[in-house]
Image 1 (cartoon, rainbow, N blue to C red):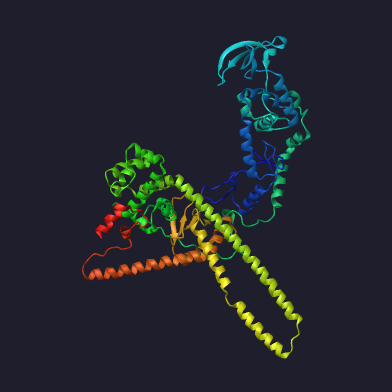
Image 2 (image 1 turned 60 degrees about the vertical axis):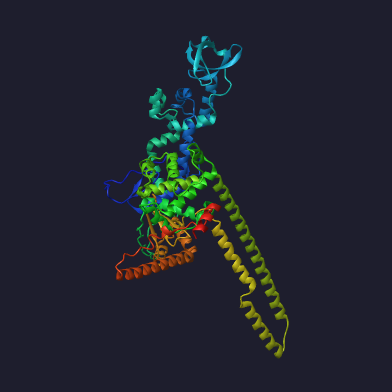
Length: 638
């Protein structure tokens, strides 16, 4: 348990008569419960102050949580003390009144002098040094001898001998002083005198009754006597005084700690997210991941762009369709070119390197067998029989996600990623250089304008010169206000660099998180803001400018997460709102077109086709490499 200003610290008991349904505040790392928010906040701020000390290592100037982590790491090191040393060390520690340094020096000296059972060392055997361990101490005093076991490389005893102390050789100390310090602090419940934990004392047979002289208070330091005379209550009073003297809360803080105040601005009500996805909610993340990968690295895959809605409709379609086939085929060809594990499996099965529209399911079955995932086993036979469309939608997306993960691990993808990173760094350097030149030009223009003003002030014109000067000044001012070609070039350069930065982006990152750790995503090719729950099992989206404005207005800048999220939304507000508006117009136009088709079809008693929901059937992979033979077939067909 961490020390408060190097003194013992005691956690608070839970409130009395606590109702299981009562809403309370709990400190995450101490599990203390508070009914009053201000008391909870004061306690938490105390834990954040750097007044705590690690009990095991002695490190100070830590927060409470840092001290807990330090104690855990130090305890792991303390447990590395050789097992044969634990019992003799605890015997020397129990009820010792020495300081820590003196106690460590005493134990270290004794361990170097004394020989005891279980100690590993070396001895002379057949004219050379050999490793051994003491199995038994025979006799005492000057006639003491030792039964040792000769050990092999795996520390197993292969034979035994009886040797004298002079025949035994110690090549190193059994333990270091730092290790002993950590072990003593970890294994004791108090110092002055040192008292070993009761569980350890029982385990290693350490006496728990203090010596007679110590029972009468002899040999106890003054600090220990004061602790027995009611110092515990005094420590609690001092702790309460420290809590009352805490400084006011400085924002931003953790969002869950923010409590509304009277002077806070009114936050708007956040709109509920739309959840009308066709795929299961737990699979939306896989859908977005696969789509964003195909859009970002379509040139590398030789796969032309398609919309998120088309991918969603194609995945949910109960039959194989051209978009699904093209995506799988592109990924299979990419893996085959890499000549990795998948390529080796295909070679063993004597598959061709060219995946066709008729054989792609065979390659899919090979990949599903390679992954050896239990989730794919029930669907493998369905795909093998040629009924891919009947596979569960969630499983389809899991397969595509595994394919994308496999593609990301290829050498070609890593090279492309490195190339993009280098290009992005070059664009950043170019942008920085352009900003530097722009700053220098502004500085030179300001210096030139200052010199003109000084020259104009020094001259004293007559009446006619004054009128002419006013006209010249007016013309100069109009010229300055008029946009120049140079400024147009700078604007074009800024836009060009911004577009280059966007094109060379390596990965898509979330905009941020709200107070409940929900993540917010925006993809530049899709006019929606997607909301992912903290456990990634629930998804929703916002699709209108009104919902975006309500979201921005609902974020509380007193919280760390919502403050950062609001800054990102405000930074890209214009770009996001334009994308939302553009998508809304496209959706509205499609609805009007479908209504017109429905009216025409009703007059001729024919069922209309849902153009938006089956548009994926008309997908054509414009970036697919075409061989000479296929191109000849296409020309002949035309």
